[in-house]
Amino acid sequence: MDLGTIIGLMLAFGAILGSLVIEGSSISSLVNPPAFMLVIGGTIGATMISFPLSQMLKVPVIMRNAFFCKENDLPKIIEAIGGFARTARKDGILALEAQAKNTDNKFLQKGIRLVVDGTPSEMVREILETEIVSLQERHKVGQSIFGAMGGYAPTLGVIGTVMGLINMLAKLSEPGKMGPAIAGAFIATFYGIASANILFLPVSSKLKARTAEEVLTYDMIVEGILSIQAGDNPRMVEAKMLAYLPPSLRKSFDVDSKE
Image (tube, rainbow, N blue to C red; front, top):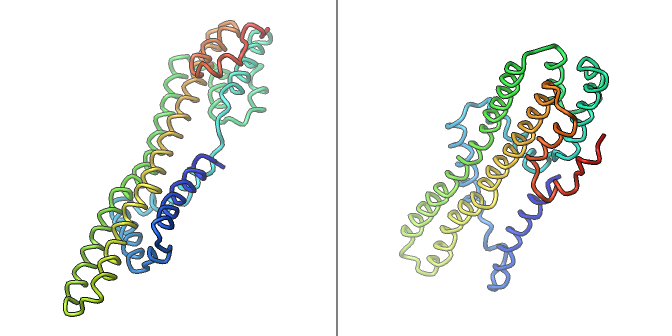
């Protein structure tokens, strides 16, 4: 579970509800089923028009990735690839095939298999980089969907407000009902802006950040695999991959202590 996403949502909604209570209003004043139906239903409908149904059906899985995602342990991956390098130096490249089966990183497994099969280094790089590009394109779907929802929701909120104001103007003969009618009209705008800026756009940004982290991990793995194939010293293999780590993590990784 991504605690950052959970805590962020709690803080955002808590800030809204807290400010509402401090102002002396009640939470029930924000409850407006017709406005909610218009904004959320309209946003989903507009998004379905923009994207193929096959992609929209993946939204629940995409949303789950924003809340539940296994973090890549970069130092652990460097340790694993360093182990591959030492095995290759000691027992030869072919010995990596059995060792690769013990890792749960499919991308790393694929790269090691290519090396074991004797694939030229240029082809190994091309295949793995194509895999990375494919991953980025797949992930762009979810980012684009939630980005589009973040754009449609405020507009649908304005539409709801306009509809509410039209309804209010139709009741000018009843001045006592104008205040509640105006308040109700603007709730739709609130729903649209709040859902866009607290949920849809942040989820899109989180998905982009996750993709960037995964691409960085894959780039590091490619560098390590090609370094092993080139016959580099295990310490050199690890040193090359350390360039992908932030300084705070490099300090905890003592390359010189490796055999």
